[in-house]
Image (cartoon, rainbow, N blue to C red; front, side):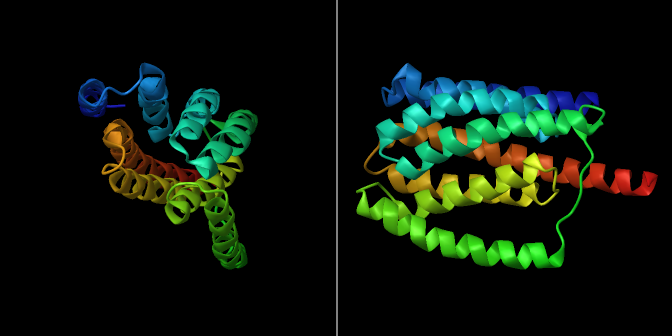
Length: 222
């Protein structure tokens, strides 16, 4: 990693840390609610490098997120964090270590049929989950469900080292930004999560570039 990249990471983490802390203090956010956000600063930087350790830390941090999401009434996100993100990120770490490539892993691509089937299944599940979340009285059912489902797909793809995971991770963070913007009116303290999601979007865009560069290098070596 070049000095320029390291400086970029330091500035990005530093600015985000200050913004999360400042908005947390201004809107009197409970410390436990923003604790996973601070841990995520390191997790997202590692994952932006396509580093397997990031998934180990991210999986453990998902337990904290699940507890916080329950308090916000984001039931789909809470279920995703605990039942999907937590175990599957740990499995991702294990699987990546089985097929190592430096600090990363050997990446692959989905076939055209897998992409089509996956898209149909994703849309169908989104309608079903949105109906369930709304019936349970959850908040922002459509967006909450979309964030959770796309997050599930991204997590599964990363677990099996499909390079398409980088697309879904960016989409998850983009939708999270939209979700938290919508929540600001009723819950201004969600500014901390909005800042974190924006940070995650930058990190996932970086991971997208690095992952594709890594995949191209691996294919050339073949």
